[in-house]
Length: 393
Ligand code: TTP
View 1: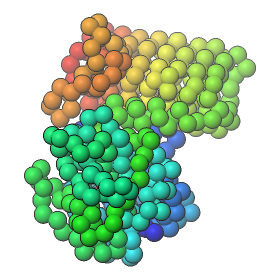
View 2 (view 1 turned 90 degrees about the vertical axis):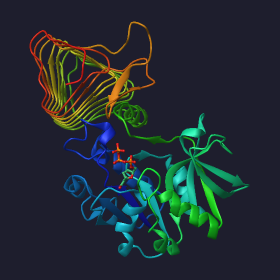
View 3 (view 1 turned 30 degrees about the vertical axis):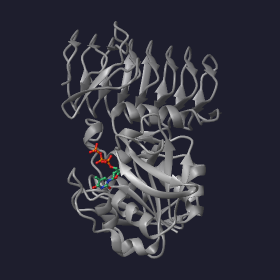
């Protein structure tokens, strides 16, 4: 069966991280976000991937190439991002037979994706505490009888988890009208499938939709937590590597460093001397964590340097960020309330007591910069020496 991976979206809510890299290509442990969905599809038996691209398409094409994980890859271009049904419609001419659709920005429970592929026309579902924020499935035994968007009185706690297997006939159902929010939605195609077929569901134990910056941190917490200890890089004999830590070949851990897993130090990266890396932390390719730097539960993008005397906690730093000596991140409010972040102009709770900062690609801080919890630095933003940053820039 072919699997369509939707990777055309821009990821406006995850800005500035998506300024030059589409959200599906943001790093989650040792691969881009969308590669986790692709892997789940291939593991479940997909024999071809059809990747729908749009925003920053080349980054997606360069990663997946013509073949990925042993299966051929083809691409469809969605000209304007006008919804998930429209994205699948862009791939219509490449489809032949029943097909699966997965979101390139979701992390799925791979076992449930295998169940989904087995079940035939089916939808992935996850149990949630507050179904009224989701598309909710009505069921009768193993069959889905209806799907309702954001119901005030949810019939079940089964939320649509954005994974589908459609019958071949669904290729003809993709021209759905615009929804209230002005998008052509794949859920309307699912509703049609429910009317005309027996549609099953596969319940996922774990699922994550990565939309906002702290969800990228959560995605890394999940996938780094699955790592097994593997030290192939150069680890100094005076370093202390505790638990499930992966040091890739070509990475260096210097003397006096403590790394507590789960953590991944990618090829070309260096840590130390005398640094402390803990929590679920990703140190991407060619990144540097230098002398007397503590990094806790954070993502450091490719080529990012935190080289001297700094603390970075619960933060996401994009690519080629440079934190000057003595840059410190606050990740906790004195009133103990969840840290808030501005997403598309609105202050939103991250739901996290601990959250630090988000820095776009190429941001640079002057020495002794203090960054308050929940601050976002846009791509290439700078701060002056000694600056206290309490607002986004
Ligand atoms: P969304 O998360 O709804 O959209 P987005 O990724 O553009 O992010 P944001 O809302 O922050 O701008 O998309 C769900 C999935 O569908 C995701 O994998 C991207 C994909 N998608 C497309 O491929 N084309 C589209 O037109 C839309 C809206 C989404």
